[in-house]
Length: 376
Image 1 (cartoon, rainbow, N blue to C red):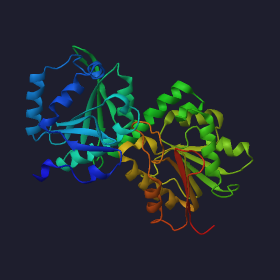
Image 2 (image 1 turned 180 degrees about the vertical axis):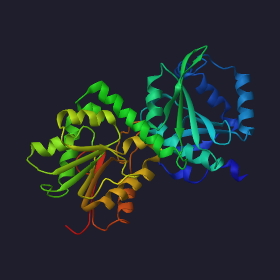
Image 3 (image 1 turned 90 degrees about the vertical axis):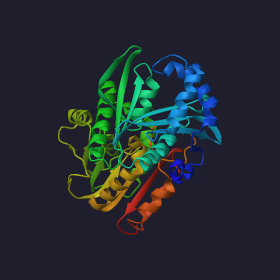
Image 4 (image 1 turned 135 degrees about the vertical axis):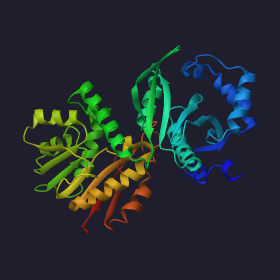
C-alpha cells in the first residue's frame, strides 16, 4: 500500500543518509542494536531486552498505524534506528540512535530532517515532537537542543534516574516561530552568563573564525558613512571590528538575547541596539543590512526561516545585504546544526535580485552572500 512506502523526497534528499521502512526481516538487526552496550547505557531502562519480547514488540509496532519505525542508512549501510510513536492527533514521541563510527558525522540530524518530513506526511495534523533523555546523557541533550527541541517542565523522576522531557514545535504550528525565538534567546543567554565578553558567547570556538567572517562581510562595499543594521548583533563584535579599522558606520543592532544586549550596553551605553524580531517588527530603513551566524541553530527548519529572513533583510536595505551560513559542502558537520546548500541559496536569492555574489573562498565550512539593489 502507498502508506507503507516512504515519500520519495526522503529517499533522495541527501546522498549519504537515507531512511527506509523497517520490516520483520530487520528484527535481528534492531535487536542487536538495542542490546549494544552503548545503547543500553543511554536507555531509560538501562537493561537489555529479551529476544522474544523484542519480536513481539516489533511485530506489533509495524502493524500499528500510530508507529513509524525507520532504519537509518549511512553511505549505503544500516547505521541506526529512528522511531516515531504518535501520542495523539498532534503529538508524537521520537527515539533515535546511531551505531559506532556513524556518530558525529551529521547523519543523525539529516535522518531527523527526513524522518520529520515522513512523519508529517503520515500524520498531517502532527504539530509537536517529544523526546526523553537521561540527564546524564549530555551529548544527546545537546543534539536535540540544536535540532530545535527545548526542555519542557523540568525533569521527570523515574526509577532509573532523572529524565529530561524535550519538546519541539514543527513548522506550520502557530507557536513555532515564537517558540524558536525563545529557545535561541535562552541558548545565547546561557552562553553569555558562562563566558561573558568572549567569542564563545557567540558560539565561536576561535576568535579567528569570527574575524574572518567579519572581514568578508565588510568587503560587501565601502561601509564608511553607511547606516547599518546588524541582525543578530550578539555582543556587537562586528561594530568593534569596524571601529578598530577606522570604518565609521552608523551602527544599529538587533538581537533576541537580552543578556547579549545588556553586555553591549555596559561597553557602549549610547549604541543603538534593541531586542527586536525583524519578521514581526519594523526596525526602520538602512543603507546596509548584515547578518553573521544567525541561521545555524534553526535546525531542520533552517531553509524556510532563512529565506524569510533574507527576503526581509533585503526589504529593509536601500543598497545591499550581506549574510553568511554554514555550508552543506563542509566535509565535517556538527549534529543538529543547519548547513545551507550554497546553490539552493543562490537560486533563491536570484528570485529577489539578479545582482548576487556568493563567496566560498575563506573558510571550508562557510559561505557568504551579497545582495545588491543595483549592479556594483
